[in-house]
Image (tube, rainbow, N blue to C red; front, side, top):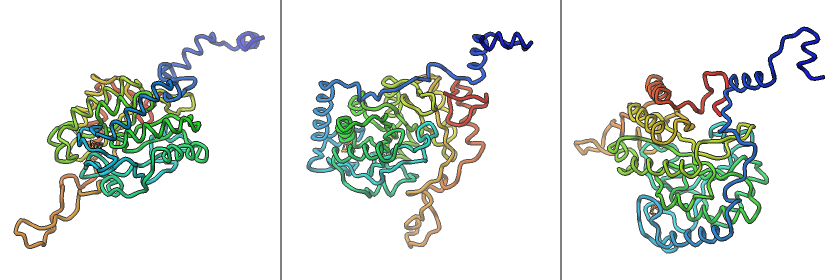
Length: 362
Ligand code: SF4
């Protein structure tokens, strides 16, 4: 006797199983296209021929590096370009990390690998001791792959999260292929400023599962002043579209852990909320209205913002003025809500924070 017939016998009115299931689905707001039963990382499905092609391409790029929009053209076995990193990666921290989105860090943490060096020079960078000053240890691609295995076997992390990889793409490609041979089974997260070249994203295609991509600013003048890259905006647009074409919208397994797709981050900045509005509109119209977005409010500038100017205009060396004073404050509630409101008005609905409809954004 099933539950429905028992209920009928004791006089309880029930809805049909199909109705119950559909009502449950509606109430939980589970969106089937974004839920997957199981996941195999993309690098696991690469053929040995494709692996060989990627290895060869990676070494070619290292010998003449035009792999990011800086286009230095240097042989990285002999010298360095603007990123100041040669053929070995310089890594600052490798550890389970609990500072990412809940769907990335899960219960065990994300296996973060913080790369030293960067191809941007954001004047507000919170990690400038790593990104601008190159602190860390040098590792070969093989050694890097062995660290991924430690994160998997000892750390039990949910993924391998390469933080600031734009300038070490060939080394990262080689490390993933090496770790595959050692038995790596975790999804790869490419945690980027989006100042990537299409060539490097082609190299990453088939190796990366999740693109965790910033879209920082919208205005070319802002990009030039704050990121020291006046071509940031067109580059980020092109890169994010290429990422979306590779892996699509963010998808989860039933445990709430993201396994594949694009997650866009936007850090709201003081006085720059109008740029955030444009970014949200563009994401909804040109990338996907199902794009998963983290609108971040934790702007805490470091690097050059708020540092004393070296000398005043009279040149006597005594000054109380600070650099980038307009950016030396926290963002206001109003600035954050302007960007959030624009995101919702544009049709975006999958956000990092808890949804208002009492269900999940997955
Ligand atoms: S990755 Fe480094 S060397 Fe290569 S183009 Fe970019 S900044 Fe220059």
